Length: 274
Image (spheres, helix red, strand yellow):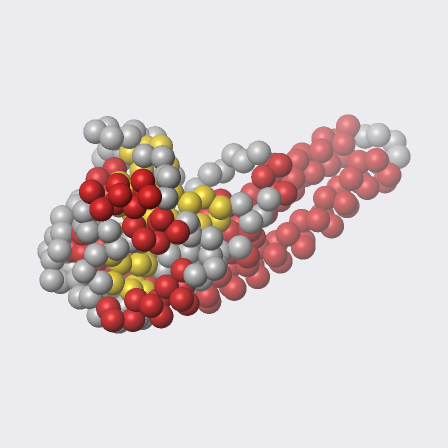
């Protein structure tokens, strides 16, 4: 049975249901939680270093490969044999496409700061992200965006418009990833994707989704002291994780908004367009 959220994302395993009483497991990904909001890290430092190193090695091999294929076509192919020309052009094209796909992965890991936390406010039903533009799931990008590696997307979403799905990575380890599908209101049409919990094995790929659902439903299964920073350490959390990362001032205030009315007042005070 295919996903109800269309267009369906590649590697789809299952759609996830919202609601409380889920099996939970915040693990090391939960940074902070209080009665208003929680913050999850989405990229651990070890994963960031590993994947950055891996894609850099791929890039290092691709660049000389492109040079060699160019030499084969224009220098060593003295007799202009069509078979060599076709082979060279095909290989050159494949290498260029590979570089086009590898560079965003390098940017993804190189310019992700402090784990790229995602914030959930259960009083207002809002979700906040501040992440590298290359953190998303786009494949087709304007090559000119590669000249802006620090480009960010900073957005506010409605929890009601976010739906969870699990996808797999087709590797031997069969790791799963939980993704939030951003849907148009009252439809199943997907307009954006947000990474929630990457690369987990088996049941582990459902635990963060379960914790977030319990939190948003105010279920006690989501303990407010489960994170790296305890509930009374909000100042330390914001100092270490939020400060200096380009979060808009109004958004940081909105983390703690306790109602839609208070959120509207914050936006009005900071002249934020609704």
